[in-house]
Image (cartoon, rainbow, N blue to C red):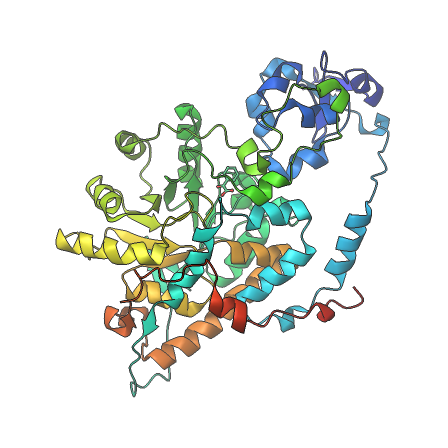
Amino acid sequence: MSDIRVLTGPQVAEHASRESCWIIVHGKVYDVTDFLDEHPGGSKIILKYAGKDATEAYEPIHPPDAITTNLPPQKHLGVIDASTVAKVVKEVTEEEKHRQALLDARPPLDNIINLHDFENVAKIVLPEKAWAYYSSASDDEITIRENRMAYQRVWWRPRILRDVSSVDWSTTILGQKSTLPVYISATALGKLGHPDGELCLTRAAANHGVIQMIATLASCSFDDIIDAAAPGQVFFLQLYVNRDREITRKYVQHAEKRGVKGLFITVDAPQLGRREKDMRMKHVDDDAGAEVQKGQDGVKKDQGVARAISSFIDPSLSWKDIPWFKSITKMPIILKGIGSAEDAVLAYEAGVQGIVLSNHGGRQLDTARSGIEVLVEVVTALRLRGYFPDPKFEIYVDGGVRRASDVLKAIALGAKAVGVGRPFLYAFCAYGQEGVEKAIQIFRDEFEMNMRLLGARTIDEVVPDMVDASSLKSHFVMTPQDNLFTNTYQPLALAQFRNA
Ligand code: 173
């Protein structure tokens, strides 16, 4: 089009105040003056980039189209003539240099032998803010610990002498083939930890026949992820329901058109939990824009990155909305974040195709029980009503899964598959796509060994009689300590970070 306005760096730089604030994002110029007070992350962070290129700060925490959908077209001022923008020589902080050195010296991928190792490396190589956001859980972080501990209260009752020369752990999830009874669960803001963000998951999943659930708040846009897919690659979509249902309707229908095979509606986050590690990071830089801003931003600055960008989520979402979702899509609908038998029964009766027993990785209601514990009461309640087993209603569990044996315990107790979030996230933060591929390989090795030792040749042979879950409900550990993990897990020694 001939009428596109081309602006220069100095022209944009003239609008560097609260009264007139222009910014450059992805080569385009926007007038955000009227939007300053509406910005969910507060105005201060925008004012820091007033009159300048904000792309680098914008990118990891916004979907690429956030600015274009939130600003009316008349505020899209034109494109920037890149040659006229003074190149900002980015100051590399000492912290960043140190982090880069650690990243370069991280242990070779061959040294990684289990999923805990990824977490250990990620903790060291991630920027502080990313680690705080990803690792944090709500309040006292009791639920996130319990998610691990609960698996340790389920014991095996293995069977022997069953000719386990060949074992097969592949399955189907919502009728879609999966090489593992595990799907990659949604985690947000992948670019905080790796420049390619969630695409690392997409590429690895493509190579190994694993299903990826795309997060509403992924750093990569939905279309960038789908465009990177291999032919026939299967995706699910995690959905945060917008207060503006039109936005949600369009998003869901677009996803369906692009071939997404399941809609996982998050139902455990009408408000985001207080993740204190994340909150303490004060994502909005304290010194930035301090003079223009004094007193104007008090409420928002210490809420942490997730809370800052979650205000669009509709807390009024209710059971009454389910028929509407069914009316706008033919995708199977799954409710993600069920924590009681009562709600599992309601979900079944509402006619959805599945539920995820989840406490959101311990990030929402603290002291909510683990998915694996909830699974036992859910299966009992559904069975009592003749709702279980039902091939048209699948139950998934997530939270705390670090081993194939955890997955197999959930399957024995009635789950169809298990969601794994943070471990894959940490794998790509530390090692990119290859890290995710390694994590999948680790699962494969563990499935092979565990299924042989259990006497199960296929997933169908992993049955309730193989587990003793009688201790699951006994929350006898008074202090929230994961003893097995803390005392017997041997972390990668720091010395293995060469020259660090
Ligand atoms: O757990 C989360 O951090 C999460 O679900 C979320 C919600 C809103 C914005 C970013 C992340």
